[in-house]
Length: 253
Image (tube, rainbow, N blue to C red; front, side, top):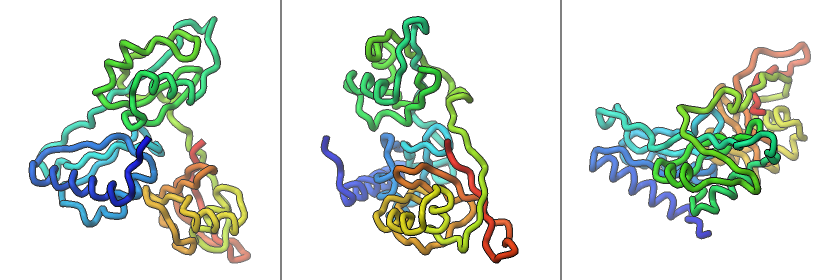
């Protein structure tokens, strides 16, 4: 499948912000992954002053829809054009164990693009996700089976609590709040490994690729290390007797 280059993405984002600004209306992207969001963040200060909103369905979502145009700039705020879908197996007695790839494959076999779907979350062999409204009817009427199991799809108000990712509060000590030091402590790796991740452009901070291993984290920073997970840095609370900093974070599990 063809993927836009960074420059094509940036040009598209600039055009969308211009349309929202000049036409005084809300314009929405598809669901985007971290790489596309990083392209947007790199030119955020250059976009037209239309206001930007983000929607992933829950805190820490990896796939985000962006809306150009908000209440402050337009005088009104149009809701994101999404529905929340629940896919359940019709009979628990004959149910198979389903994985993320099973549900995603079944949806894409309907001709639905990945960019029309937010994060797919599995719990107790059911799947919950947000999708663009244009594909809702296709899913409700045409999705009958996942693998060999009969399923039913329905629209619900929002993610049930049991589907939401858990945040574990954790703490530890480090020598400094440099990016590489914090990543090493939070994701349990050596500082050299953390430094290589950052320099290899595999660390995302607040939706943007972080290339500087010595940059200091700020409370509220959302950190994603590819292959290791995601966490929110919540700050420091003083020094130990040996002069090390005690830091706190919330890790998505």
